Length: 220
Image (cartoon, rainbow, N blue to C red):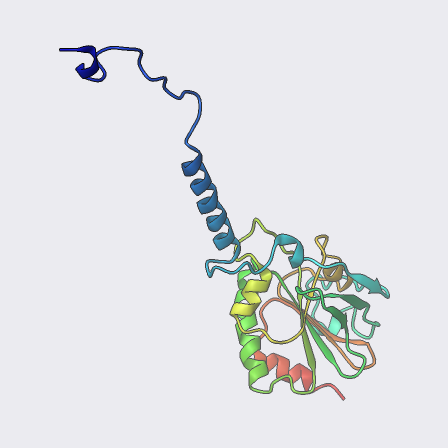
């Protein structure tokens, strides 16, 4: 057999092998897949990025004297009743300006934490109550406070959207300044302010809509 017809691989110098690296194409595919997974997680599973952690907080300016903590006092003994409510100026999750309380009508502020099971029970109750006209003459504002990316039910924005909350929302800052200004010592926390800016009533914990109706009936 001549050299020209010799079987391949039985002689001659072997072909050099690639060492010390991974194929470029599989790596690129892996990065694309990883990016898609991260985007899906941030979107809450629906393929659309809803919000990053920073948008769940907002800068809050406080004008006025902070209210004392409720500290378990009964409404009749609440030291904040008849005090001027501090004005909160901040933004919602989209960055739109929000100022509370309203200077035109009474305001019911609802301080809620996304991870709080009592808040998760209260918010749907309030949504149904408002839909039935329960807050017709009152501005209801949710104050998203104590937000924590490591806690369950993140993000606050997605949670309120899922529950059908359509009333205004003020995003508290990472320090909880809005909550502190209103003496919040539990969640959910309610503060009713009349149209003159005076605190009328506060309560901590789940509240029935019957109680809310009775409290609103005391407004002039």
